[in-house]
Length: 353
Image (cartoon, rainbow, N blue to C red):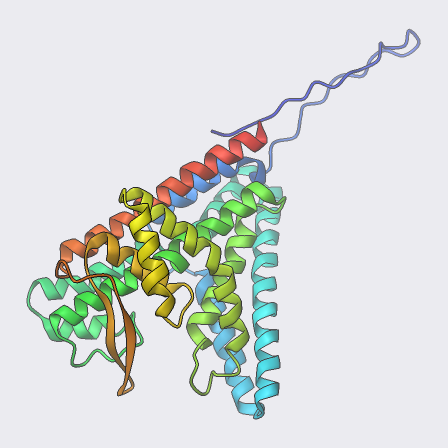
């Protein structure tokens, strides 16, 4: 799968007065020319290992930078305009820095040794994919629920969702887990892969910078992209930009899911009808696609810090949400990822050939 292109250059006959110089071996290929193998290695690392809890992770670094910047901003800035400007600086600065640092790490490690470069690029790219992390989070909540420990399931669910979990029933926990699986399938799994593919196929910088840049935008949105204080103004620009960046990968994911389920028209039609009612331009589409395929209903009333918030109902309640339903949802995400990965490798091989 590693592609090495040999070019035969025309040469003029050697002059009788000067013997032909000995040929020099070609330099080794850089990791960017080995994108198919790097994409496969990164996907394999995410599937087999995921994100070890005690390992340094780019998102942890991004989160620390966002938290520190937010603390300083909220302490020293008071006007809405100044906070909005600070939000622009945070978003543009972190996205640019994440992509640039990723590019620099890959290039420096490649100069040390090509295998070191391949390893670093694969690890960084794997850290952008949240497939195993998403599956582990779902299993973490479902495990005590299987044994009837509702209190522990509520406690574990509170690690992953923003809604209040203290009084949730088992059915509401199932719904919360499936909604998390469906929403994060797009911004946590498929969108990073989309930008990795764009970086590998259409740009000279490779997969890592674009994938890390998107991950920075997604992290900003998840930490400060709220419509309530104190983040209303600070997180406005980051939330809007993340919406735009996720829009196309989300629609492509919906199309892929519909094709896998052999119901593309039904899935697209349901999203056109119901998902547009959701205030988010992307999460509603992702959740609606999963709800339609699985024959369940998502959305309804959730509580956030004691305040009720109603989300549009998505899908039809043909079946109850169970552990098997959630497992099928995770399987749909995995199949979508593999299809995109195969397309990416085919495109990269075609472009390199």
